Length: 340
Ligand code: TXA
Ligand code: MG
Image 1 (tube, rainbow, N blue to C red):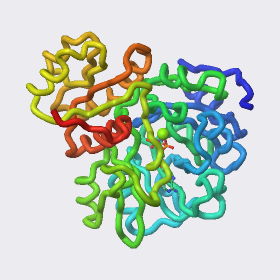
Image 2 (cartoon, protein in one colour):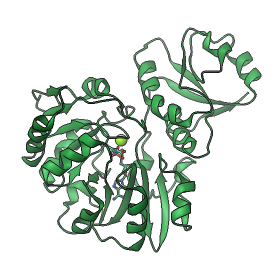
Image 3 (cartoon, rainbow, N blue to C red):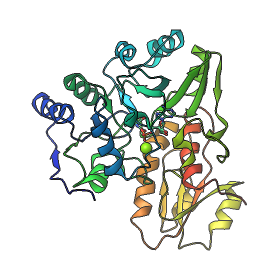
C-alpha cells in the first residue's frame, strides 16, 4: 500500500527553495522537477530504498531502469565506465537532451538499474534541474513524472494531476521547452545505438559518431529481447484507441467526414479537419519543434474526454526530430496505422 504523502507544491522557485528540495532528495525523499525535455520524478540515486519509492509512486514495472541525472558530464566517471565515445558525445551534446548508457560502477545500486549492470546517464540543461542536482550533491535518479502508462508531463499541472499525494515536493516551474523525453543511446564496441529518438537527432549523432544506428524497436513493433526494457511497454497510452492515418490529405478529409464522434490529431493548416468538434492541432506541419512540444499535452487533453473512444492522427514526418514524434505516436497507437 502506498502511504499518502502531504505534497508541497513550490511555485516560487528560488535558490532557497531549490536548496530545500535538494535536502529532501539527499534525505531519501521524492521531488518532481522541470527539465528541458519533460518533468522528472527524482530521488537520491545512491540510495536503493529511495529509488524503490519512485517505482511505487509511478506504478512502474520493477524491471524498467532509471536514468541518473548529473550536473556536469565530468562526474560521469564516478558512476560508470566512460571512454572516448562518451566524451565525444558529451562535449557536443551535454548538458542537453541526451542519455548515454554505459557499464555501471558498484556505487550505483541495482534498484536504480533494475538489476542491469549498465546505467543511463543524463546531464540536463534546464537551470532548475541542474541547480537541484548540484545542490543535492548526489546523482538524481529520475524517470518522467507521470503515472506509468500515461503521457509524460510537459507542464507543472500534468505533474500535479498525476503525482499529488505520491511525492514529497513538486517544483512547479515552466513548461518544458522540448516536450519529448531525451534521446537514449547505448555505446558498445564503438557503436552508438539509438534506443529512443529525441531532440538530439540521428543525423546529429552520425555527424559526431559515424557508427550510429537506430535500434529496430524504435520504428517497429517490439519482438524478442529488448535492448532497453522501456521498449517493450505500450507507452504513452491514452485511454482512447489511437490510429495513425496514411494517405492523401483529401482522402483523409473524406474518410473522417462522417466521424464526428472521434478525436482528430492534425496540423494547423488542416482547416477542413479542424472544423470537426473534437479536432486538436499539434502545431504547424513544418515545425517539428512545435509538434514535439505539444504532442503529450494533446494526448492528455483527449484523455479528459470520456466520450472519445477513437483518435485518428495524421502521420508525422520521420526526419530529424520528427522521428521522435513518430516514435511516441506510433507507440500510443500500439503500432496501428490505416491507409485511406
Ligand atoms: O528526458 C528524459 O530522459 C526524462 C527526464 C526526466 O530526464 N526521463 C525519462 O526517464 O524519460 P524514463 O524513465 O521515463 O525513461 C528512461 C528510458 C526507459 O525507456 C528505460 O528503459 C531506459 O531509458 N533505460 C534506463 N536505463 C537503462 C539501461 N541501463 N539500459 C537500457 N535502457 C535503459
Ligand atoms: Mg517515462
